[in-house]
Image (cartoon, rainbow, N blue to C red):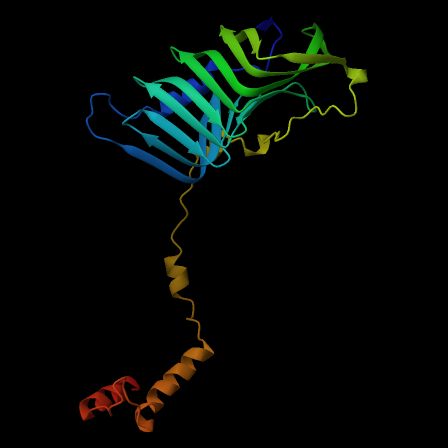
Amino acid sequence: MQKTPSPAPAADSATVKAAADSAAIVDPADSLVRIVRGYYNVRIYRSDFQAVCDSIVGFSIDSTIHMYTNPVLWNGENQITAQTVDIFTKNQTIEKAVFKGEPLMCSRVDSTHFNQVKGKVIETYFNNGEIFKTDVNGNGQTYYYMEDGDSTDRYISGFLVAECADITFRFTERQVSEIVYRGNPSYSIYPMDKIPETQSQLMKGFKWEIERKPTKEQVFTRTIRPSQRARYETLSKPTYPITGRIDKQRTELPKSGWIDRTDRYLSQEALEFVRSLGN
């Protein structure tokens, strides 16, 4: 086991806490099983948490929330993407969030550089609504830009590439306090002017999707458009050539001795009825 105090993409415990607050809709004493569904262009906004996905489902029976199809979560400059996101709550407080399907956690260093963490599954654990541990399980990878200088003049001095089976991040007061690499860890540190051309600085599947990040106005400002029924009722109805041909043929059928499926001639009453259709 190798412990490395190197920093990693910042994580904010308020991110998932906000999700828990908005999703805790069931009274624990309620015996009913409730299901909440949201479809198509789902957007979530809080001052400390934003998320988008195609659809979302919440179950009261096990206090879980599931996000599907291109889910993305943000907290400040931090972003997590995956194919699915499962959130587990207890007593209206989040306990765990699981990101599956090529999960990738990243944070922006500047306009062109991003710290990145990737694995098969990313699991984040909470205590009293705050992150205290994140596990990256399977094929753990880390891209991290090391910075030097003071708060007024910081610059990127190096690029760290680390790989191992699993990675654990531990947090103290919402900051990464320890990183543990397990399972044959290996790493390389490059000065910025000596990064090999063969070494990519963006992980496979990386996509900075800041343009999808919802704003407060997009979520809370809902404009109800006035009814357009009166305007559409004044428009002329469309006519179709095929309709005219069908109507004409319908009036000609009785004259041509049209017969039914039993190959018998229509009765006089039936003929009168068919003729009436042409009027």
